[in-house]
Structures are given as structure tokens and as C-alpha cells.
Amino acid sequence: MLTGIFAGLAAGALWGLVFVAPSLAPGLSAVDLMAGRFVSYGLGSLLVMALSRGPRSVPTLKQAGMALGMSVLGFSGYYLLLVLAIRDAGVEVPTLIIGTIPIWIMLLGKPEGLLWRALLPGLCLTTSGVVLMMVAGVSQPGADGQGAQDWTYWRGVGYAILSMVSWTAFSLLNSVWLKKHREVKATDWANWLGVASGLAALVLWNALGSDSKVLLAQADIAQAAIVCVATGLGSAWLATVLWNIASRRLSASLCGQLIVSETLFSLLYAFVWAGEWPAGIQWAASVMFVLGILVSIRAHR
Image 1 (cartoon, one colour):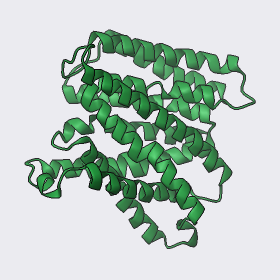
Image 2 (image 1 turned 45 degrees about the vertical axis):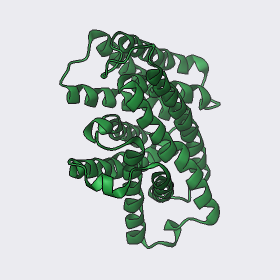
Image 3 (image 1 turned 90 degrees about the horizontal axis):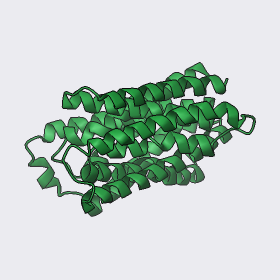
Image 4 (image 1 turned 30 degrees about the vertical axis):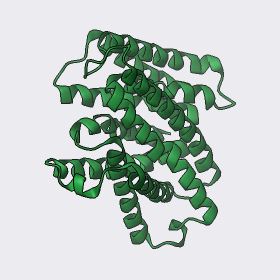
């Protein structure tokens, strides 16, 4: 259980980097950034599969189909929606909406043997933290100064909600699949998801992305490439391996609680990038999140 908890927290720390990636590569469109990240993930997965050379490292046709569908829910489709949300609504509000994922997973993924009264304290603490962060987000409506009546802002909120639904479904289905197919290694499943994500990202980029000549002509193309590779290998491949370990060892509801770490780290990275200290209400929300994680771990023992 301890290994699963540390793996889940480490995955959250790596996922948090995704929220500042658009600011680090401002010259890339949402589709370009999504494609760069997941093509890097796919190429890294292919390299690991080639070095493994084991018969089980190659999926069956049924496993490959499942990986393709899951990759759209949890990777290429989810991340495209998230980048679009950050583009239209800034970093803070999408971060908060994504931050509700633990609540939904805790509600939908509760083990049969766990009583609601044991789960309730952690759920209440997490919900309180999300509410406090939302209050802080309303008082500071976004880095680009968009007002609450701006259509672009509300479109971004809609994208964020869709991305939240997409990843919630992925997390629940992924947990069930990994527990059902214990013969598949966590690394192999991460590789299959990576190859599928890379293929889906290429299709989307070919249809909606920028022309390659336009991309190569950008002044900050080297920095953009580094961001894509770093988020592809770190925030995608390694984070997925860690999350698969957590999903196999822990219940879906406890995994959902650990996703709170993604919100904490993403806010930390955003504040470091902006060179600002969190407001008092944001500190209070962070304390609620941490207490929620600790109480939930105790309830699941």
C-alpha cells in the first residue's frame, strides 16, 4: 500500500507540470502542444518496447484496441481539452475544475467494504479545499484579466469540464482493467497507451495542427521542443507507469484522493513561475487538501 501511495503522489507531481507547459511554450497552439507531448510519449514507449524484447511487451489486437480507446480518454483527448481550457480561461480555473476529479472518483470508485462514514471526512476536507480554491479563483479571475462575462472565458470553463469528465472515466476504467489483467505489467500498459496516444496525436496534428514550416520558423522552437519532450517522457510516460502501479495496488477511491497532489503541485509550479506567494485562502485550501489525503489513507487501511 505504501508503494502505491508514493507512486500516486509522484505521478501527481509530474502531472502538475502540464499546467505550466502552455506558458513555457507560448508559440505552440493547443493542438501542436498536445501532439508534441504525446508523440514524444509514443516514441519513448516504442524505444522501451524495443529494448524489452519480451513476447508480453507486444499487445494483442484486443489489448491494442482497449489501449487506443483509453488513450483518447486519458491522454490525447483529455490533454487537448485541458490546453484549450487553459488558453481560454487561464491556469487557475481549469486547475480547480480538474481538482474536483478526486471527489468524483472517490464517490464513484468506493470499495464495497468501505463504509461511507469512513470515507466522508476525507471527502469533506477535499471538497472544502476545492471550494476555497474556487473562491480564490473568483477573486482573482485569471492571468489574462478576462471578465466573468467573456464568452471565451466560459468556453474555456466548458473545455475544462469536458476534460474533467474524460479523465474521471479513464481513471475508473483504468483501475478496473489493471486489476482484471494482472498478467500485464504496469510498464507494458503504459507503453501501449503511449503508442496509441502518439498515433492519435499525429492524426489530430495532421488535421488541425500548424504547418511544419511554421513551427520550425518560430524563434523559441528549441524551448518548445524541450517542453514537449519533458512533458512527454516525464508527465506522460513516467507518470503513467507510476499511476498504473498505484491503480493496481490501491482502491479507485484512494487513488482519486491522491490525485489532489496534482492540484497542489500545479498550483505550486504556477506560483513559482509567476513569482508570487499564494493568498491566505489558497494556503488554507492546500492544508485542506493535505489533511484530506492523510485522512483518506487512514480510512483505507
